[in-house]
Image (tube, rainbow over all chains, first blue to last red; front, top):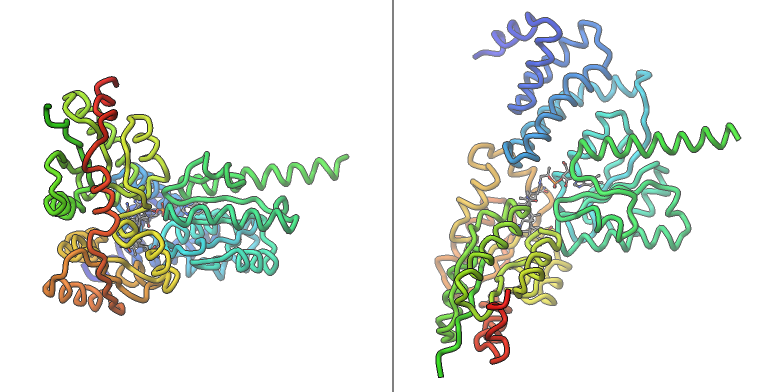
Length: 237
Length: 212
Ligand code: B12
């Protein structure tokens, strides 16, 4: 099918149909179609935040569920993530200029010795999709570099990723150095990566283990709400 | 005196050939080998369950003096070791097979030297197309190569055998991924010493598994 024909089809759909079509296109990893759908919704007066959450994030949510259930595999998830990224690249500047909700800020990186980054990137993208500002400091990050990034960006949340049994203990090194500096409680520390578990996260002193990106978003939001609740309580007192 | 009851090795399918060779070379006739599918590698969450089922089945036969897993932790985050501890089975030390072929200290040194190392064993070289290219979906989505490997600098071929044809294939694999190529001969490394130690079970262990 030529681009022209695609054009006609997408723009002829009503909003609800188009959003569903975009969910399918994310699932199938079709970046060009996502760019087009994003533009059409914006032209129809949708806010960038609505396009992001209703068309892109929801579509990616389905991908996440099917990945968890073993229906989709890593290459398909990457394809879908790339399609979503294509849409986000249009929305990002618009979001920055708009009054879309700001949920908080996260610094995220993969720990020292580990250069797996697919999961980390996905979490970063979904957090951004949920309205968080995300600073991705990359891979193979040692404690000093984490500390420097916290100092520089002053996030609410520190996220660490590890995919190797040999690198996951390094999270404790980072958390211990936060403790030594007396700044552990300045941050919500979320950790993730396939070999981790709830028990592991608690044993290294993290606030929570997140099994996947959707859960990471939920947990981050609930921690932020709690923190804001606490701040309001202090103001009220 | 009757022959000692055999030791059962439950290995990863990716190690089948090497374990069999090591057994033959070591001359340990009382070792039997069964393997779990190698593709569990990409679904480590399924390894503990598969291992447990295999151990239970083996115990039911009442045939073995002990059961040993020839597996790394393999990204199960300790869940494999928990199953093995509960079932009274042993495991070769190491996070993954790259580590027990190379030896922990030498492996750490290799990784510290260049974190961007992608390791190949004889098995991975032999089945590079199926396991790496197809396993990562690169035959369907060749453009994902950079996404997977953009942080990598080199392929390190940890060779068990000394085989010119495999070396050539490993070099080709590296160039296909667009990475530098490094060759290290490891032999069977820790695998062989672990099997040697397990080769002759001490008398008192003979009845262990009948009880459970
Ligand atoms: C893809 C992959 C690779 C790719 C990585 C590409 C890249 N750019 O990242 C390649 C092929 C290059 C690779 C290389 C290696 N890999 Co690898 N890899 C995998 C594989 C198959 C999938 C990982 C993945 O990307 N999953 C997809 C994402 C979406 O899921 P995820 O990472 O789990 O992330 C989700 C959650 O965990 C969570 N999450 C993750 N991080 C974070 C962080 C935060 C803050 C939060 C909140 C949540 C969160 O949310 C994410 C999104 O839902 C796993 C096996 C597996 N099934 O886990 C092995 C695996 C992790 N790799 C493994 C190994 C051994 C290696 C190598 C050493 C192999 C080699 N031959 O050299 C090298 C590593 C070298 C190094 N120095 O780091 C082992 C680890 C074994 C162990 N004992 O630890 C595994 C488990 C495979 C195995 N069974 O042996 N690998």
